[in-house]
Image (cartoon, rainbow, N blue to C red; front, top):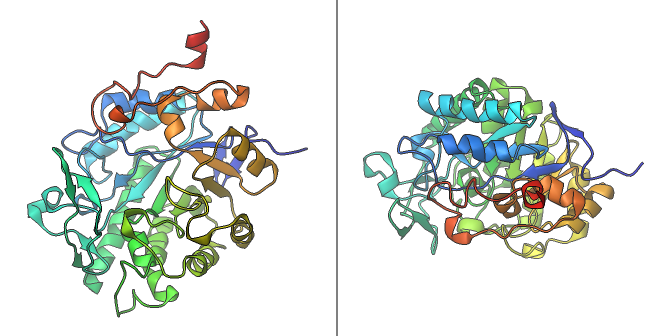
Length: 366
């Protein structure tokens, strides 16, 4: 029988009821101590019909923070608040993993302890990139290059964050190695100008990702660990001179590790699917190189998602913004129903308006 977008499957050790995944969505609604709020419990519970929820990007340490009002997973209160979220999702029959995040150079001194400079593989500023400092949009600060001994501290932060996610009741974690944040900055030769063991060749530039994965897998079953990559995207001014070759190297590097899934941003994040020369043929080749579950992301609508799953091109599809305005997105996709339109003015920051108040299809029918 033909596989459907709405059929159950297994992502590593995570059994999911369908192949519709809620992609990570930064919403800038955390408390001053970078913890989820009570409304996060409702927000994620409302979307528990997704086969899998990937949380909003969550910083592994204070240093990893790049935007105001984003949550962390490095303090006891954060773990406690996230536990309320996972309990609610599980009670509603859902599965949820935490996305582990270090922004690297995509930060501002006002968001760093004691006003320190953000860290990066090299002292190369992300030109034209802004962040939110809690009051206004500002140009990200010029970073300083990490010293080699410091990198092990960051690797340790990923391990501790994984243990905290496990304690908070998550079903797994996703290592954020995409969209121009720290690990992606190391992977790409635009932001990575290092001349040591972490720069230059693909083998060197993938070293941080490998060390992070070793630490995370050492803290939890690899079948509960996913990885997100975006080799063809120039998000946050992170570009590579050979994106196809980089993609092939990274996918080959990740294969054979027993991961839960590989989450691929296909093309430019939030932009064209054919960015940097990406073609369907290249995607087919990349998929064939990986021995685990493959999660597609970027520009999917109902027809494309259903076709890609039926053809075996992907095992699951991550939807981002459609989940903001449609908490029951799975039902709407299944029935081919109309979609609520989101309000961009409430995407980032604020309270429950535009967060937990979008209508469900069944409520509209009633």
